[in-house]
Length: 374
Image (tube, rainbow, N blue to C red; front, side, top):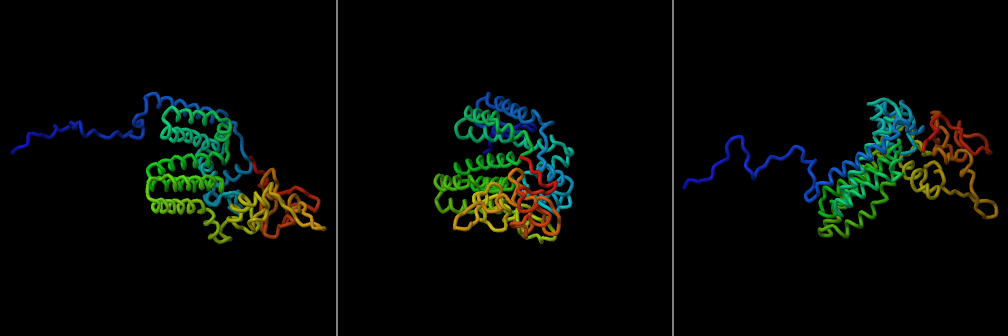
């Protein structure tokens, strides 16, 4: 029996098979009212205006800007986040937050606005992602409110409007929260892995601060993900492995690269990236000496035994070789290099060769690298 159904004429499309729009990403989510998209675009435009308002006079952060300039002219300095183009001395932090700034300076030239521009872009993206995160949870009105509040928060306007390190970690953690929300609602491994990736990139921007949210995310997924417990644990293990791999990639690079082929690590007394990250910028900020090989952290309490069994501030708290609480740099050169702004392995207590002055001195003299901005 011959079928009466005929194929549609050439050049015409069946109503059941509509062509996919090339601008699919631009479509509003199902159920979103028509006014939501224009309102969101208005909030994003306001964010761009606020964050770029003084971009041409945003200024330089001396310590970080020196590194950004070096990284913009030398790929070796870019990789190792070095203060100088010859890559002889690193920052006293992981410099992932400077990678976008260095690329911008490489493209547009070394200007204060070129260093600030990536933070402005990160701020607008953070506002858009915040809307999506809250809309998925409480609807478009709540999403617009959250995006608007983030836009006009004074600290956000300052953070995204200057060449600082906080904008990058903020964007990474907002993206991590967005991916985590999708993961905990659907138990999709891909979303959970994406969450781990963003946290790892946040670690490259501001080290252990990016890990602060991890315990809460772990417990939330373990309790609420709609799959069996064994699968939840397996997914968390995979996401955790990815997070730690991305987080520690720069530390591993510095650890396994021979010392003669890489810069000296500022913030350490033994040329150790791990000591700099987890000691000088981590646990030693809570109590000095918890991690060996790290330079004394600014503001860390440190005591030394005194005659009679009492404890009093030791000479290394404010004396020769101590880190400068205003600059975060330790002021003494590395071993046999004359590099400013770091401590050599023999610097403990004495400030190292070419570092601070006599026993009565309380500030390091350092060099050009001893001018860290806020």
